Image 1 (cartoon, rainbow, N blue to C red):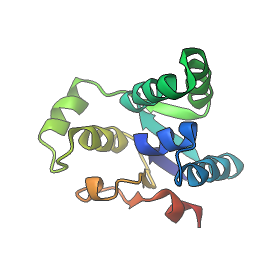
Image 2: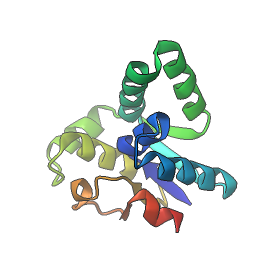
Image 3: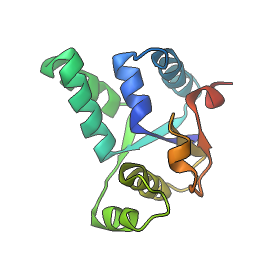
Length: 134
């Protein structure tokens, strides 16, 4: 299985934000035990680092990101991704960038996010974390 993981799920994972953190942890545990491949965008990693540094401190945030980078593949948000996202049917620019990054992955099973409405124009299946768990 190959999934693109949205920023909100990564933040839930690293902050254990209630009530979503538990499902994020379970999601990553399932991915590891079943050899799923996870992807995210470079902007998701930088946003996750920013949040982690605010809640966990700079050094802990670096360790958290380093751990994530050992498990998740990063899709760059280059000029083409950014320009294409501007004219996307997906209204939220950050979600449009995520979608354009996800499109670069062949044989993608879906995007995992808590923002299902933000991806209503996605041509890739979109799942909430709990949908993928069961």
